[in-house]
Amino acid sequence: MVDVVRDRDKHCQVSSHQYVHRDRGDDWISLEVAHIYPHAYASKMVRGNHIMKLCGYGGVVNRAPNAEGADRSGNAFLLRSDMHQYFDAYHWSIDKVRGELSYNR
Image 1 (cartoon, one colour):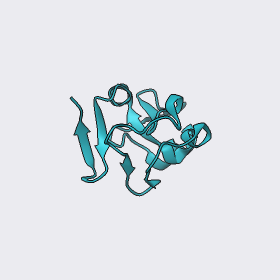
Image 2 (cartoon, rainbow, N blue to C red):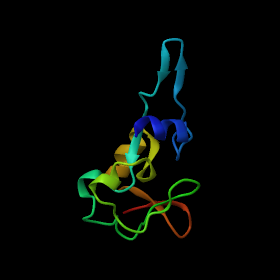
Image 3 (cartoon, rainbow, N blue to C red):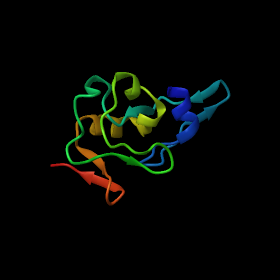
Image 4 (spheres, helix red, strand yellow):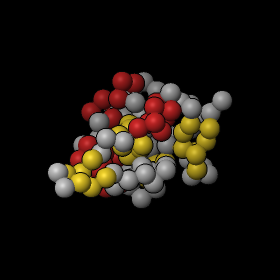
C-alpha cells in the first residue's frame, strides 16, 4: 500500500513537500503514509465531526472502515512526517464540507 500511495501522491498533500531523488534511489525519509481513519480504531470510530475528504482519489469516506479496509490506499494519503504526527494527535483534520484544513482546539 505504501508504494501505491507514494506513486499516487508524490508529495505531502498539505505542504507539497516532495521526496528527494538521489542517484542511489528516492529518499522518502521526510514523508509518511497516513491513515485517514486510524488502523487501530477501524470500525470503532469516526473522527469527530471531521469526516475526511480527499479530492480526486477515494472520494468521501462516510464511515470508518473495517480493519482490512483501513489498510488500503483509499484510506491513506502522503504527509510530511511532522504533519503526520499532528494529524494523528487530532490537532488538525480535513473539513468535508469546506474541503479545507480544520484546526482542532
